[in-house]
Length: 236
Image (cartoon, rainbow, N blue to C red):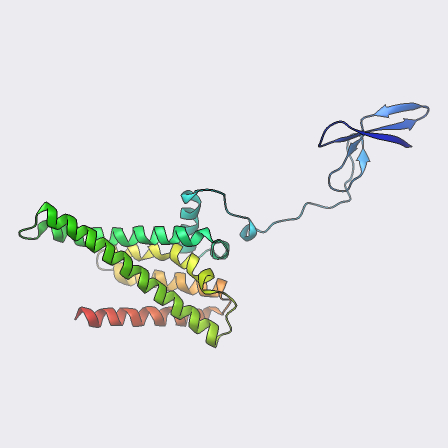
């Protein structure tokens, strides 16, 4: 029979019970079911609540490594990563940073050799060309990405009953935008980049806007196809 309780520390509750005329010390209170026992017991309180991976909160503080891993997972079309980053406000910041770096790499690899070999080029003209070129490319790439994602989400929301929000779609899309670096591969790079970006946008629409895969593919492919056609006409 339990006679009285006393706390030994914050985590364990030790009790005194009366057994055959003497006190026995050493009872422990289970944190799950509340049962007091000595040694071991069969817990009736059930297991602790299971938290799905996609609901696990992101690390606190500055953690570019985590978001870089999420970016590669988005590029691999991993649904859990897309859903997690769609609910993470910080993913928008890291997505903007990663896509800016990717656009800068594309510009430097494609334009810098031409700048260096241009007749009459000086250190000053090369420097100003790099600064202005990087500024233009980052603004242009960001605007194109916003328009593509915005139009895709608008179509999904207005015509297909999308349940997501623009920023929820934009966060994983920006993290996966770096797949456009495939354009640097000679000959096959541009079509590979178009296919990869179409796949990323399709999965984001499917996972975040909750629309079927076929409509998501048609929207993503149509938007990218129209953009590439306009780019080709302007280049001519």
